[in-house]
Figure 1 (tube, rainbow over the protein chains, first blue to last red):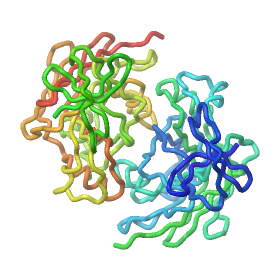
Figure 2 (figure 1 turned 180 degrees about the vertical axis):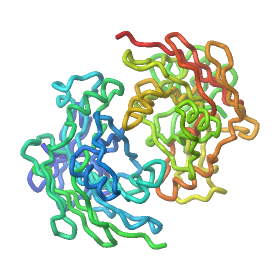
Figure 3 (figure 1 turned 90 degrees about the horizontal axis):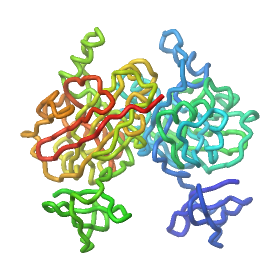
Figure 4 (figure 1 turned 30 degrees about the vertical axis):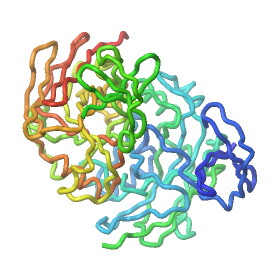
Length: 261
Length: 261
């Protein structure tokens, strides 16, 4: 089932996608909800960020080639993380499918995409086993963990390297069914494929991250886990359009624009 | 003016503290609000976390002695941050005044307090100057940035070193007036003073953090900035009670308990 958050006729609502139609629902996405009877053509609504998480988790270094290629570019030996230690991003940076990613005028040139699978928690998780972890996942969407590498290396934190406003596109919708073993992540820049990798070839699985995190930190409905990315990105420039496909989830598309000054 | 979030008679509400009375209000803390006419004795309500921020910012290393003493303990040269690069904490870890901080059974021994001033944003801030920054602050409270140093050094992220459930006591209330230049931060463990420092002797000021962050990241009403701490802490043990005073703000008190196992 596909859930969409959208705006139409001046209001923002949740809906279910059924073919080319959005059927509005009301209630709790993770609990009881009902159809309102209203509907819209999918092509005529504005797609919004699917949700704003209480806590925005990010796996970080979670694909081998990404770690190795990043280290090689910096002239360092690759260091694979020994444990599924989760990191964080910030909600100010979220932006929807088909909106612009704005590069500040003073940002250096190494603005990169990172195409990521996003898992959305639907049921509170505290001290859950790996075997039980996925039963706490409500569904999946796509994220672009936009990063500027000069800031990422030089600053004390990732505040602007990864959390600049509009640098966390997420969407377009939430899909509750995913055949993860069969999924491919594909990224295109201006229509040309730049990377393709099996979505599931992670260092640490979604279940491992949820289980380890939940030993210390309670995950709650609406929390998101961005699962990391593989490979590298070209430096993105004003006007570039980045599309991220994940099999069965759809396409997240955003244009990059550089602000003046 | 002092705003309190509290529970009484089965409901949670916002109120204004007037002497020993809490006058309930309804509406938007940062906008229009009204008195409801209901009131309670301050001593008879349960104090709740003052708010749950959309983004939970933390200054990190922001007092000279804290940086130097931490480095000396690790046998390293102290490195003062060159810029006001803000970090993050996570809302799962928030807990109220007079609640227990729970140390997981597998946590190492170096569980430390960090007594911190907390600034609460009241008005959206994007690209604000240092001169204008404090006009975006609604008020202040106290935070305890509880940290386990072995995890802090050894893990890839701070997920459990700083964001374990209950490790971010915040409160007891929001005070809109603060004479920062005159304020002292004082920490006591089991009634004995362990540290005392001028709250305002920060490496980077609240205005500097807000101005620099807001060049890239929009701060919104309810966001909190924890301003860092000075000095060091003894290793806290089961049953220890930590009190943090900041002049004019009151006292944040929490008992530390170690979970079995």
